[in-house]
Image (cartoon, rainbow, N blue to C red):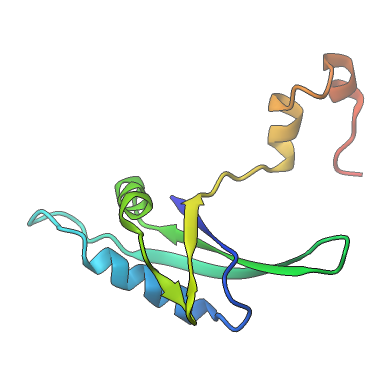
Length: 117
């Protein structure tokens, strides 16, 4: 499961984000003889809007959906560089989903529209 961390500080590194989520997952009660939940991957992204304002966010992939749901429920009062971190489930909106699920496109437009040119 992928989780997005919104509006993280500019000086945050992948290692900072990875360790924050890994430390939080360590607090999860684990049933004996089950696999341990862990962070698979963490990535930092920068977004610049039309006015030039830069915003930073991170995407963290955890090993299981159960661990992700637990994080979404229990990730409270977590800070990176003295700034509160807000998280939510990440929904990948790839180009293939636009054609199939976007109601703004009519059937004939979606069939004739070339997304990959």
